[in-house]
Image (cartoon, rainbow, N blue to C red; front, side, top):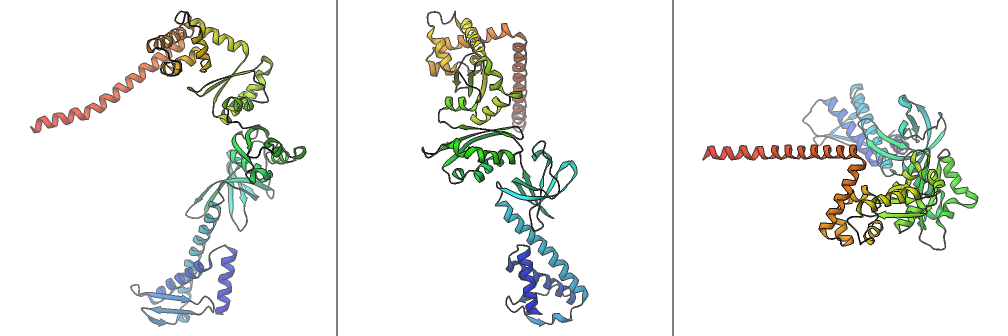
Length: 424
């Protein structure tokens, strides 16, 4: 019988992935609760020991041996209840420890059922369940019970009754991990994913770089006859993927990022983190993309605020800037060129940058820099009076809020001063 007990405990530990020693200790604790229930002496110290090899059970109350074979049904029921609670707690701890280490990894499960709000419950084996919320599913996908699904583990929380495991197929790292699984060069660190931006179900842009000049990073990701990228696209239900080369040069990287459009010119304003990309008229819609998707993903990929302009729009903006400053920079036309070289091609840019960069970067005299900024603002007021009025109102409201906050800060000080005067 005692050998049978050891085998039962070993089977439970193996089936539920629970530490064997923890299970023995749980049973000893449960049996101690049953003994206390039977004898009713609450202040006594009860000790139960189960031999890990033979399964022999010894019991003591304040170092006095006890015969546990005489315990009845009530005590046995207490042991059972405590043991069930302990096993469930150990099982939760084991599941949490396993999946918290797999957070950020792709796992494969089986669709069990759909619940309200279109949440999908996924079985991960050993009676472990995870949830794939509606907003973490790729638009247009429809999984049926019994189908296999791959997803990224994004959240693991240990609750009072169960471990909550949340999966995602829309997270950008899901695509990153798929590339690691499908492209050996990425898994081995020869090709690196330097940046990634995604709008799940529609398009992903991924920038890659090779640490070995002999390896083409884009070719490695695409695979022979597109076999590797096809597997990833199929997993993402047809989502488009643009693979672009990463570059240390911000200018080159942005030009790559706006592809498939071909940029004819680009200016960077480091002060604003803004890039103006000039493309031919026939490339404009391609550069912007459907509903602005291409330029939006390119901006996220490069971490730059990207504006797409045609040559005519670019020239018009520069001409407006030049005309507004012509009377101030008369005899110094190079200064306008220097502003453009700094990435300032419009009155808005000039207004937003302010005078300080003009002094520090372009060696403008402080007085001239202030006049240039003021001239830009006056021109903006002429062309966009409603916008200027709105900006003035916003500034007035901000000043009023600051004054109110200052008065609130001063009130406690004034009250403190009055209190001190009274005490004196």
